[in-house]
Every structure is written in structure tokens, then in C-alpha cells.
Image 1 (cartoon, rainbow, N blue to C red):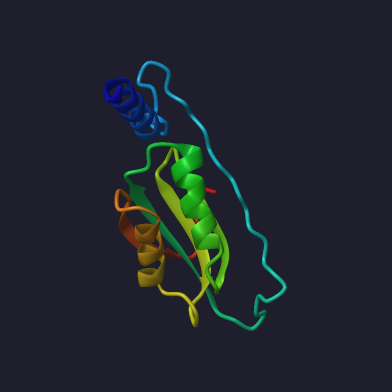
Image 2 (image 1 turned 90 degrees about the vertical axis):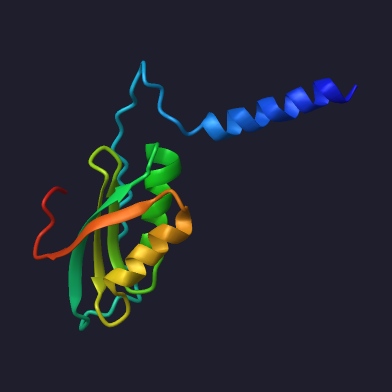
Length: 129
């Protein structure tokens, strides 16, 4: 009686783990744009900086890129955030008095251990928007 129950549990776990993986035979190409507009609490006198960085470890646009984007956009001091799954590129505009590049890296790491930030740089304008 326990064998069918165990098989069902293992099957459900495998389905859950593989749910976010792209199918190699039919690659899915998506760019998720969730532009966050400046909120009413955005300080017009604040000094904003723009950062671009790569995020490795993302396997899907909806479960990975969109989640990271939403987490960064909700940070106090972040004016705008976008994660492009296809290019593995994150672009964030933030108040330098409230957010640092280290804070951005920590936020990405808190979303999941699989995500690794690299090539962090401060830019005047975003390279690809």
C-alpha cells in the first residue's frame, strides 16, 4: 500500500522540480517587462544611479526573471527595475542614499541560491532597454 503512495509522492516532486525548466526541443523565448513607475514616495531630490548586471542560474522567464524583478522593484529606494531573461541582464535605477550595489546582489541571492550576479557596473544609460 505504501509503494503506490511513495511513487505518487516522488512523481509529484519530480514534476514540481522540472516545472520551471525549459524544454530543449522547443526553447521558449520570452522577455518579461514589468516596469515599475516611480511611486508617490519617490524623492524628487534624490540622487539616482543606474546599475546593470548579469544574473546566471535563471531557468525561466516567469518563475525566475519575473520574481527577481519584482523583489528588486519592491526595495525601498529602487525607482525602476527590469530583468531580461533572454539576455540574463538586470537593469535597476536606485536612490544611492538608500540602496547600494551590494544590496541588489543580496536581494538576488535571497530569491534563490541558484542565482549568481556578475559583471555589476554603474552606467549612465542602460545598454539595452
